[in-house]
Length: 255
Image 1 (cartoon, one colour):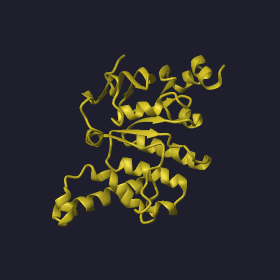
Image 2 (cartoon, helix red, strand yellow):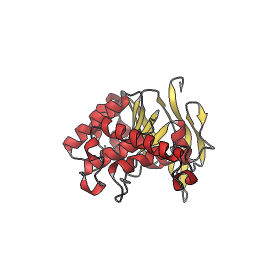
Image 3 (tube, helix red, strand yellow):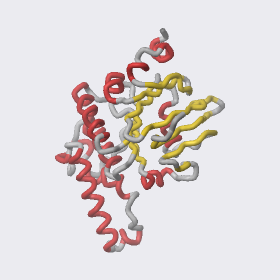
Image 4 (cartoon, one colour):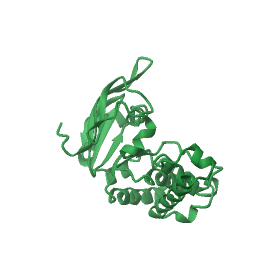
């Protein structure tokens, strides 16, 4: 496997739960500047693999490399410093905080202010808060939802909540963004807006790996696709190859 242009490499990754291999010896890589989709029916192991990549789960075997660095000894909170950010399948916004405060949470992990700075309102913390607020607003503006900044999550439409989560992931200016089912729960117009948003993010030199069930979105935004079923990789290639692949059709439709 030629990985010269890879920003991330997943090599022979396996993860089991109670003897069941949720991810079974999966390998692929994402090129720099690529939008890659990870597809498969429910239970295929896609989100488990995402959680292994982002260190929420420890793998049983295999390797994950990012920009040539072995991610084995990194903690989940250290990935942002490496240049990796993600969203989650289930929206995770704090309803007691405004939209901009929710987005600011994504940036705080990059600041160097500590608890004492915050408690005593030291200059370092004030500077960090100002930087976080500025970066958060820039992310909201980039996604064209800056008018929601001072609203609370329960006051905005579901589709906007998805974009707020993306703004939180983007405010750290990642090199790579992992999107876990970003179109889940969206209507057609919201999905079309999401498609345009993904391309706008990609145009900022951000490599993207996404899990998605909306095949129309996947086929229209992906440069390449990895298909999984029962924990295994069953196919990989451009959209034109995947949509006619017999193993993929069998996994989805039983054909």
